[in-house]
Length: 527
Image (spheres, rainbow, N blue to C red):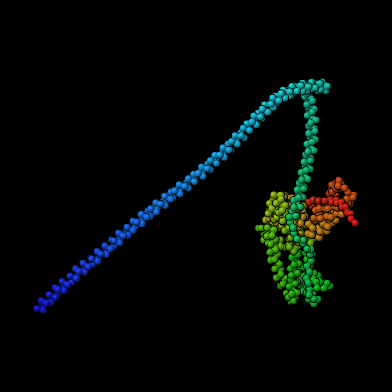
């Protein structure tokens, strides 16, 4: 019984579950159907709204298209009218130009017609003139024939003899004129060459400006006290003898207070001695051993400094690839003077002058600069080697493999040897310029002042001259004349006479300009 009830309960439970599933499925289907219907209704309404909106947009687009079409048509019409107007204006302008051109062509045709008529008239006149000339030529030929026959009859000479005599006379005249012309051309060329040389030299002098050198012949060392001077001399002069032996110089100690003079033909030794003595005085320990030690140290310092000075000088003159010994020799020139002029500065100056003149003449400026820098290299050792410094310098240049042009310039810049290079005269001229410029040497400065005084003296010798002034370093003299004694007509002649007298009595580089001034002043007072 219990089992039957349990089975029945299971069946009812299954039936309830099945019924529940059926009811759930039916409910779900009903809900889904309702929702799908609602979705379809909403979709239909949206489709209707979209269709209405699409129709409205289509109508709006259609209206805009019509408006744009109308606006484009209007714009194209206006543009067409504008282009048509421009074309019409261009056509009218073209017609106007064509009409003007036609008028010009007509006027030119009328002018050509007139010229053609004038040419025809001229042609007729020329034809008549040619006929008249032909008649005159025949008459002239007949006359010449008659005169020739009479001349031959009078002179009893044939035509050939007369022609030969005439040719001989003409030949002599032509030879004389040719000789005079050749002489004139030669003199003109010589004068032109002289003027060009003077101009090049003057231009070179003006383009190069160097400082004036100072004069020194001996070295002096200041001594702070007489007690220090006694210590320098040493007991029985042993210190000063040791110093002279170590340095190879002469030391002059006199009664002059506070000064010791060092003298030597070798400028480098003199410089070593001067520096060594100054160091000894500063150190205070003065005895033979200390003297030898300081002199050795100073000699090494000076040797290094000499080489550096030589390298700097070569660099300043832009001369490269020298032998190392050449730098030392150039540096030694820095301690050498000639008439108060520093030889190294003089050599650098000559190098620049040579380059300037070589550039003016179209030559190798670098080679000319090298010749100028090394031209006095022999003076570095002329106190050690016999002979003149040109010969010594040439031997040094040959030993250190310098070019033949450099060797010839060094040996011949004073006119001692044979000149085989164009650079040798340049070095000679530059050497003379550097030595003779005002302030370079003592005697040159005095000669320069005398030249200015002589220039003014020559001008003052002429009658009517009130005052004269030499200006521009002697390249110009201005002469003021008395207006009551010299008139305007005589001023040109007087200036020429002064210039001629200056040429005859003076020697000078370049040219001197003579400017003559005449002034009339009328002064009156109103009271």
